[in-house]
Length: 180
Image 1 (tube, helix red, strand yellow):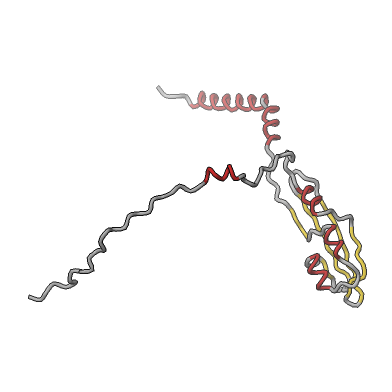
Image 2 (tube, helix red, strand yellow):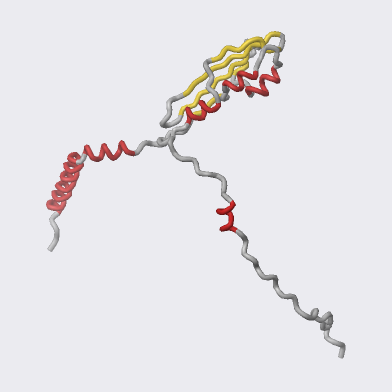
């Protein structure tokens, strides 16, 4: 008994059509499932992080090297504006709002004259701003052990191995057999 090619084609077409109809009826659950998973997006960090603490150190009269030691290498130092250094910082993280800050340092006679800057965060504010964990109320574990807790880890006394009573013989057999 041989299968008819006509009935085989009809069966395949019917199976494909039923699969397509089934897919259209589960559209909403599939869409909900797809929304549960978000693709990974690479963190974009550009420039130098400048904090309020760093700005408080700066003052008029600092040399270019001193400014560079405190703030780092400027992101932009133009030949056309030799007496101006620009620092910019941008961070884009998944789950957090993008942050962008700008700072310009102006020099006169190779000494810092003034600074123009956006409102800079403190180090603690910056760290809190980039923390994307959902639950920030996690309890920090205690990092010290009490003397009672350390008693559990006291080393046990291991008996020293007994030394042989008599030293081993210092006579060694000859390495070569005696001549015959």
